[in-house]
Length: 612
Image (cartoon, rainbow, N blue to C red; front, side, top):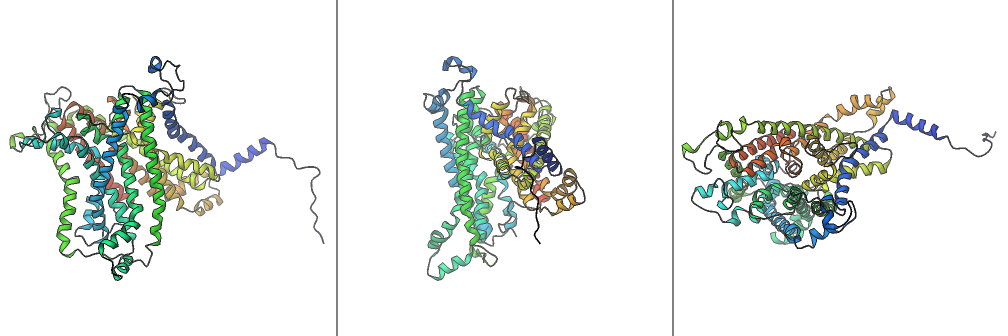
């Protein structure tokens, strides 16, 4: 018996457009993942991609203030700004010297960070160092706090009369530090090295943790000495992690504004970040766009190199395995020298700077330890006799306004970043269209390629005037909230993607079978399961936003000051004790928040480094 299927007469006709649209609406109402992904793509295209592209456009189009100089029309294409920044008579001071200074301090910071971080990474991951659990957190403290905090501490200790104001501790003791020690390249490079040395500790330490010590034993059994083992086996296999740490430190130094502003600007030592800030402050929109574009280019190149090296680092997977042996090296007679070295690094990188900052806030003359010199005036004083600061910071309205702005602005930005990051993770993992998923992933990662001060310049270019559907936002809290939110999306979205990749479709499918709609499934299934990831995705941007300066220093005005910008304004006024008091409060908030994240997330920055 043959089964015959009747065929329709004539050619098949496509469904009418309205039927296809009706079908798509019904499908997406049950599972609107694609619509969610498209909506997020539009939102982040506007908040992330558009500002960066507009910044690049501003570098090659005529601005109103330069109509007479360029003799071109408003908005015309021009090479005037590129010429001015790169090859004009002032290009040396505007770009080339700052670029050279940036390269010098970055190279010096990388070398010093390796000299400090590599031995510490080895001690924490491969030896029986006493107090290893405590050191594994304490030695990462410098990165938990703002880098420019330690610049203020350096200024407190080594400031000389070159810039006037209160004397430093060394001057109070009768010693006058030379300019090269008090300001400029040496202290900037040293502070950045100590601040970013934890990168080396983490990357190098974790790589060593995965390294099978049987490879070293085999080499030694064949007669190889320690130098040959290190040069021919350990270093080649550690190279991806070491170079990755170097590129990350370079990218961070490239956009670091606070340290160079505190220790470089007083003596005319400019880096790219401070040169960009000066161009923005003097309303050189075209020149600032070119400078920001160059910073973006250098930052992108460094991160691309880092991404390639991370792929190389996957070779470590073949080194360590379940059967791999990671033998702890007994220090023996070197236990005390190693302990002294680790403790010295802690004191120099965190202990002494924080103690000096805190003591300065209760001294009329920094560095003088006579009893009549101690005072609480800078905290709770009522008549300081200064022009712009009449009371201690705890009695000053500007401080509490800055604290409140920090809490609510950064809090809303972090809450938005964490929530959107989870939605991005859901859309990327569940989207039925791969191209949309890839585009969303890349756009939300873009701020990671753009140093903070360059991203702030992009936001200033985008929102200094009305950009539908938003009005002009400069001078309002909204621009700070949006900038912090967008700047934190790389971390929030990666957290969301990572957590959603670990959640299978089965719980949602079970809810769909019993008739639960998409919103009900998100509320009752996805969010409860991902609660821990969501909390971490909110708290981490909150902590980063609290201590960040490079992003907000360009966008904040006196009425929208955060704690970071308020402290910098006090530094500009010369009120070093009050500025240090604000910084101490900031450090307490940042450190407490970091510890809270680790507690809630049940994670540790030193995981995998042998902290037991």
